[in-house]
Amino acid sequence: MTPRERLICALRGGIPEIVPHLELEFQLCEEVFGQEPLRAHHLNGVSEARRKDMLKRNAELWVKVATKFDYSVITGLHWLPIEEQMESFEYVREIAGDTFMLSAFVDGTFAIPSGNDMVEQAVRFVERESEMLEEAERRVEEAISVGLQLIRAGAEIVFMCADYCFNSGPFLSPRMFRKFVTPFLKRQIDAFKKAGAFTVKHTDGNIMPILDQLIECQPDAIHSLDPQAGVDIKVVREIVGTRICLMGNVKCSAVHAGTKEEIKQSALYCLLHGGVATGAYVYCTSNCIFKGIPVENYLYMLELRERYGRPDAVSELEKELNEHGL
Image 1: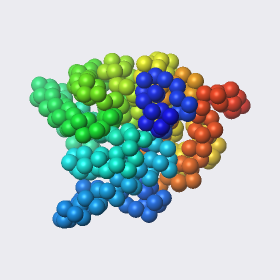
Image 2: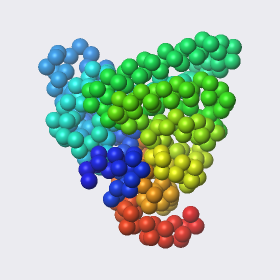
Image 3: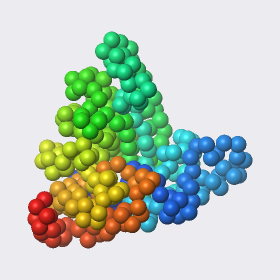
Image 4: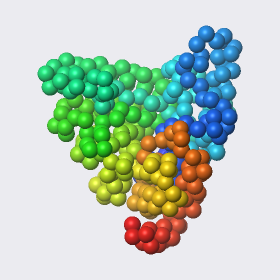
């Protein structure tokens, strides 16, 4: 199976020959490949010929990332403006065919406000309810419009990355979340799925108080299942079964600054309970591969997938976890 085919299998609840892998972002391109990934500001004031060359080189970089780390999806193009993303899709297909999925990153639903306007935003939810519902409507319609453009241009999977939760729980209470987020998230997901794309809802933090509402919205997958916020992938799997694919839960703090043993314990727990035997799981960290993560730690995390991420490795995986009391 190609990386793309493995991911499709997992998103549909199946068990591929090895669990698929992806990361929302890979921020170590300069360290690993000696090349800075392209962002919107790099294109300011350049000639058309130069712009095309830069987009092609950037597409080549993200194919290198996906190839080296066995990603199922090209995820680095979302740092570009919409038109350049769509043009880059063509370059990726020229280089890699359909080995990898193309992705869109679009989400118009209300996220945790920034620290600068958090109090003001909280007051608006309470005192100006109708205005906030109108804003929710407008934001999601705009997001759907952008997402559909990217899907028509070739995106097969849409990552919706509005963060809803702190480590202690969601920013909005479950009752308010049902009013201001759930119906709009459902509309967004339905629109993208109707257009033929897979959908992934990402949010960090403790999602357990709103997990039932996320499930109601019927995304194809939920990411990141944050263990640092107390989200236990075993518990989530027991709740959702294989009707929704689970992505993530490998503890970022372990991959960032933990020992090999800490990385191993987190990774093996995710593989088993995510899982290797049940299907509907994508192996990845609980956030992304951000600046400062040692490349050797990330490579070790991938070595563990290679050894334990196959259905025929379940007994060995269970034995390892039993020895650690997990």
